[in-house]
Image: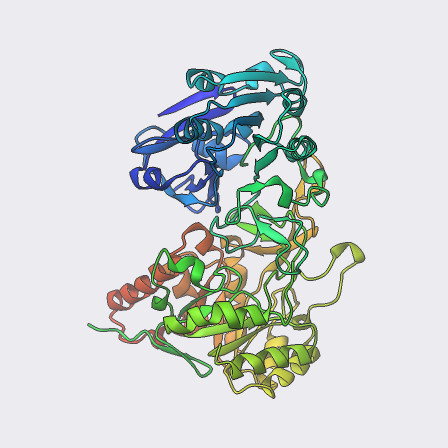
Length: 268
Length: 312
């Protein structure tokens, strides 16, 4: 199955029973987009939905690799390795769950929302933000699950003329709330700050360029608050991609390298 | 027909000529969940330093045409952690260990080699005299890599040689005018083998932000993009030194490995390809065996340096 969820955004269903059986929300897989050696590296993709016999992925075409993947025809075989990494923690004692998505950062949230409903017996609230109305993806998916969906756009074309974190702040998360955020790094840092100030736990799903996906190459490292030399860098692929926002050193991250201009692809 | 795959890399006996390149295989444990790593001729570890290193700031990685640029900066947990937590796993696996070491001085390299030998945590030492990622490019060209200066290669190799009886492999950089000079220096100073090539220095700039893609500005290029350069250097060195060569640089499949053996490599290492296909090295071992059978050859050593020139 392949559908264009928004201009340049694709949803693909992949038949992969073994991966689906083991997969947890927030984990990811490495996908080899072409049969030849070009592009050389595989693309990390989080699970949008997890079904009994397969998974779906949601991605934005950002470069050559994602363009090739978007053009793969239904029925073809793809080499996929997964599930990889550590996903979102689930805790049924939490009273309120708020999912905050910036742009294509929405990718891992439908699977998470389903799991929260099933495992925690709560219906999460969802904040969807993007540059503009036509780039908002997933509203229908969350509404079908019964979630309340609040939207925000940079240009005010739909929902509030605000950022995702502005909306999050007005939802007033408290100590009984858990915030889950995925999107551009500046958004994640702001979500972490607001959550901390209001006493809510916050989990962020990070993205990074990866070579292996198995914790070997150390290419996807981000700086943590750990002080011990040799443990300061954490691997997005193996120690994450989901992290407790409190362990990330947000001031160390050089936002100059963040290409996002209002929205961010999880992979290039 | 049973073919012989074993090779002797400067005293390190390998049951087949295939290992993995340092930094692309962790300490073996990460990939053992996908295949039996004892099938490898040897496991080469990520660079070990005396003390833990956090490595460079991110971003550390960017994909480029037919390969990738990295500037990891030798992040590792240090020798003590390796001896306590990583080496026991590899020892239990009964696969030869090539311990790759990195230090700031000849004394540090010597100490690493000595302690690895004493602890029985290595079957061979690969001295990384050639990591391009351990200085800050903004401060200028940075300290020259040891492997760029033959006199320093000699000095470092002698220091390590005097500290260990283990087979000593000196890893060379391609970022030189003539790689035969540091190779000869390593041989004269007592190295048992040389390995080449480490990564080629490279750079990428994001055209939208006009910023370097790597926080370190420059990085090391690997992958199939560098294979012809690596092959030519292996060929150059293998015709120049008498000690064996461990060849690497963009080896992705069996046909690549055959080229390196024909150019004179006694053994080969699979590097970045493992990121794309974790069991690539094992496929290549099987592929070399099939190649020998197909060509009616009994022993892989008959391939070493077997390149055929027209009219000769």
